[in-house]
Image 1: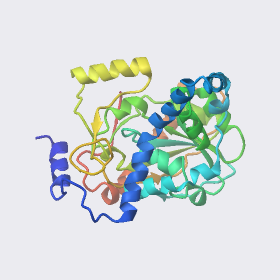
Image 2: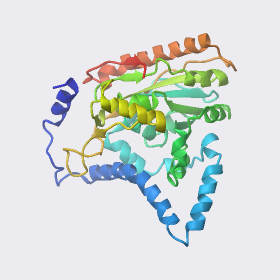
Image 3: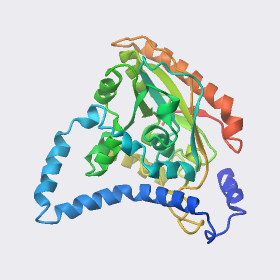
Length: 345
């Protein structure tokens, strides 16, 4: 039996197979919030397909497709609506695990920041809750920091879904988008999930492998704009789902890697619990996620940074990320089976 499997067996040892009938209403509401979030993308697609299948609404659907193709919002910092970020459903999601945000240093609102989020996990749920919503009160903790969580440009090709993520302030992770946001003015900042799709394939409970050794793009964004780099480590992000083992060289990993090259995102085979039973399902486990925001690393403004300059600030970033992990690992990752490791994809 693998160490990860043994940990899972211990996690589930005292857990009943089915959810008891006397579950408090608050916990039921939290479960409903997460289930709703997981159903949102297919719901959005269904809305569009229904509109496109009716002769009454087909012209509107076609006009919307034209708008989708021409809309510059994903590259210009999204269309953030504060009331959407404050919807009760996000607080329900945060309470389910629970998710929390830890501030370790003040950030000057007159500066710009490039936040790096680690690890990617299966879906980066901690990044969504902490930085795309106000469920954990980001704006109160970091007053004056106008943050944009970034995601793959392909997400903005999905009808209706794109409007939701744009309203949360989620923008494209393209170079143009990054540069546009961090040069808008004081406080405008971005959050990049640095490990990306490749790192999702390493997201196993109680482990901490980060695909970052050759990830220099986010450092270049900071140097071109003179923004400060801020590492964020989310303890527990890898723990909320199990993943089918996919060691390098296995048939599964080869298929996943091939899919990633074609589609730009990876398809980890994950599973968790169900809504009414704990044995199997795609709902995440109720395990805490704690996002710790590290100290800022000031960067000079260098329009065309050299490899040496990029490598210098990449090294400083990794050192601060390691410091954050080492400082809090015994508090938030006491059950870890593998410490932080920087790897190549």
